[in-house]
Length: 543
Image (tube, rainbow, N blue to C red; front, side, top):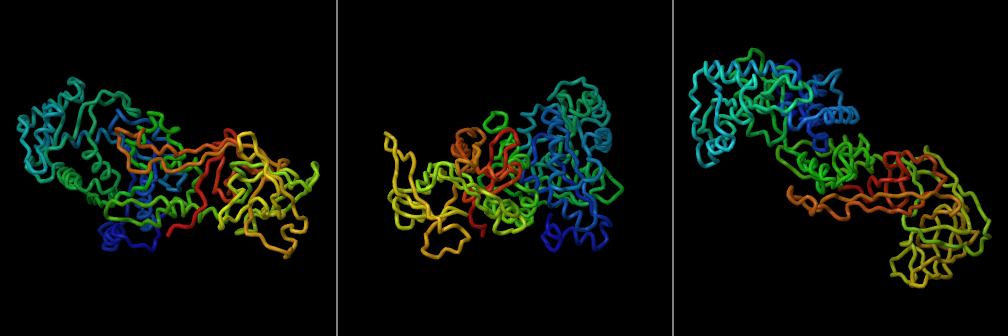
């Protein structure tokens, strides 16, 4: 969570209110609409509100903004709750729902009608948009704006009773059609919808709009500071107008906006994510290439790495894009001392050690992690036939190539020096296998100092491996995609599948995260079969 000694602009505002006694207790909330899964941007927003509340010993609510029945589902509610708990954001014994306040919100709408600050409008959605005007052109009053209070009450009751069709009538706030802020030009605050609500079923057929319901929900729950992303800045006057015109008794919530956080190479728009899932362009909401919390978990990210990343990027007043390498660096820092390092060959090349007999085997001891001796050691098998990476051998190599070449030597990790003496090719001229000899005097740990080799490579014995599949994930998008061409904008190399991967069998705990030597960090994919996802490659830390 956000570091307690940090003092960002949000912290300064909240801290001042707390110190001056304007708020005796700080109370924040996270109000997701249950129409999709949480993503890394959601976690950024949650972390801000949650950390502020905890810093001042206050309260934090999870409240589902479920006022749009056509898009919401219990599936998303359950997924959001699960992800919140996995991330460690404790929202108390229960979660809240905007739909629980429908009756109260309805009565507040009645109050505005009686006060002469709301009216029923018969304009079509297209006409309402036309009458609103533009940034340079003022709006036009609706011909229904001056209906009497009695007529508005009667029509609003008819809307509630299901007498009118969807789109035929709406309830609008009566504010100012000449306002420089288009959001204040008599916004719609209630509309008719006959879609069944996942929670209230068919009890209601009128639903409050977000801009009307949200401030009321905050007030009902006693929220002191409504922290939200920068796109709601222009909505703040409407947020305040709603609360101020209801003539409420208690102190009103204060809205504070922070900059939205974007991540390079991914999309965090729920609209885009839903499009990818529904068109089956990805493997569900938990596709390891997605920035959803489900996707990050399946890919192998730890909660500690995500929270560390969120702390490091801080809070900005304006929208920003953070390089994904910073998130990856947080993950590497978390895993480097915590997981065992094992040998895995992704593109096998057969090596026959000709001065060993066919039945020769030898147990060698290797350490599991040089950075953490507490992870212990394990035994690996050395034998006549082994496999190395194809890229670790060249017949003729450039000067800076420090691996195995024809006529050259290299060290096998934890084992011996081997020298390549012969290359065997198939009829197409492709290398089929190489034949080498080993030097028994060069065993790792023996103290041998007779000569040196430039490189060390990993390997797998044919007597000590199992085969598996590996998914190598890269950014889903190389550039910012467009909603109407998502499929074309997807990086065609965002998922590379390796089918013939060999992993040393001596490492038995395959359900935990591990580092494949030189290839990166991996985790088993959903424990369904022997498939591993690369969590992140091995690169230098982010600077």
